[in-house]
Image (tube, rainbow, N blue to C red; front, top):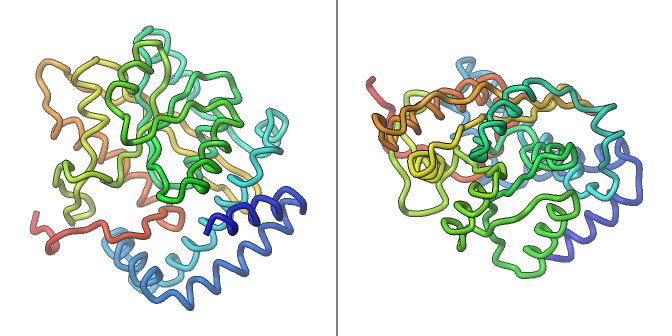
Length: 283
């Protein structure tokens, strides 16, 4: 399996970005049609998100294509620099991030499997923001080293999920931004809440660290505007009361933001495992 990643890295580092995109699109469309399980999972996850049911299959195919584009840009980190950012990425809301960092307590970044979340971290890191990312380790050690190497190449600090708590506190204490994904639970300790009139388990991490530290939570998303250009937006910090609110209340606030962006960009929501549990909510 690890040979595929290194092959992808070789191809994307050798050929121009537009050629890599053409190849990625070709492979992703084939993947969409031959992988029934992945196709049906994406359609299932998008079902409560998209009101126009006749568009779900088309949007699901676009998910596969956009994810392939995401991988191309991830593989091309050796070519990523401030000039690329200036030419291809529209920046919005950095003042929100700067004001949050000015408090001197660090910042919790609320991210999602949306757009190009890896590139968002790379961009912020290259712009000089101190960033630590919590990342799920790959079972294959060589693949894991490759992913960590790509992130470290652009200046990100990687915190494996197995060593999360102490390292996360340390990152925040040193004034870093700590990036956590809020739309998928990787452990057995998630909190079951509503989203899109369905229920799913959401990770506790963001709320846990917020309640322990009082650190600002800033939602950050990088979405694709078209084939070559992106839009990075840093939202205003999520307002919460450390003394009055609990984890559930904070996650609900986070989910309102996640729901807004997923609904706006369903073709860029990369959820390849079934996320909904139980039947449709009556509320």
